[in-house]
Image 1 (cartoon, one colour):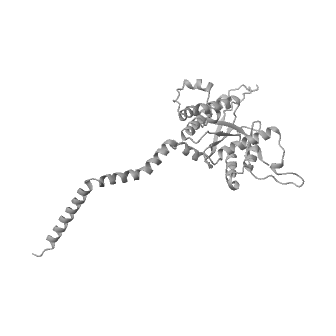
Image 2: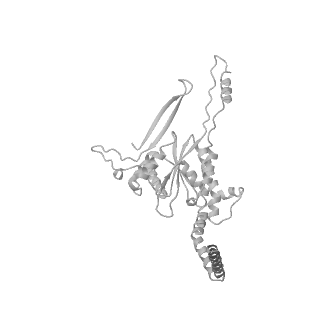
Image 3: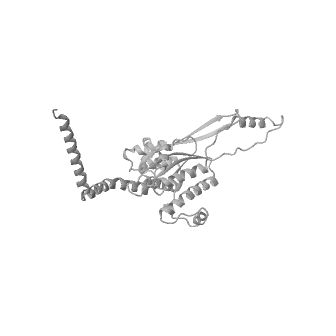
Length: 314
């Protein structure tokens, strides 16, 4: 099977309450060959929708695993309890966080927060902005398996293992236009704003909730209250420069300086020996070196004269 779905019933307060959890796993294993049936993916005929999704995911993986300067980082996210309005807010927050950095890199002045609303009416091209894609794990596994650029399928297996983590929920892939640590850090902060981590409830709050439950009138049916499910978003890892990173690795990459700063540091390291050599040659061309050697000569003569006086017989 290309993906697996597991349903688990968890009883929290009693036999009348249960939670249905769906969790998916991405598999890159070759399909089982049955006698008399075609099992090769190239010879199978898919419908229009599956063909479109397969080509879309193949292009997405190709942008993340390209071997040239067009390589784009891919962030793998696990989303849960996300409705249409929450997903729209997530896309807007990601675009708003990346837009000032995109405009700064293009040479335009950094806009103020008030100007962002007018810029959203005429945003830059889609290729210059991060793109969020909600993917199906089954077709994503087929695209990983059939992508020929991965050597020995090791990278594909690591991505499949990474995408299968995080428990229940769907899978989303966030593609960045280029490797920019500043943009990556801003996007990570935007993800935390949209779906902050839940804090553990204190014991006092738990007792207060129990007291409210005990305040109902016996013999009457309790009013059914639909639980409010908060959206949950978990960062699973990323594919950056052809390498698979975990959560801590992604955070380390986001803390790196910008590419311009790294280039300036490399130029400084390479040019420092030549600058020192030029200073030495400049000093040697004048009379400073001659004075230094003359002083060294006098010091050696004085040392030799004092040693001869100490060894002379009385």
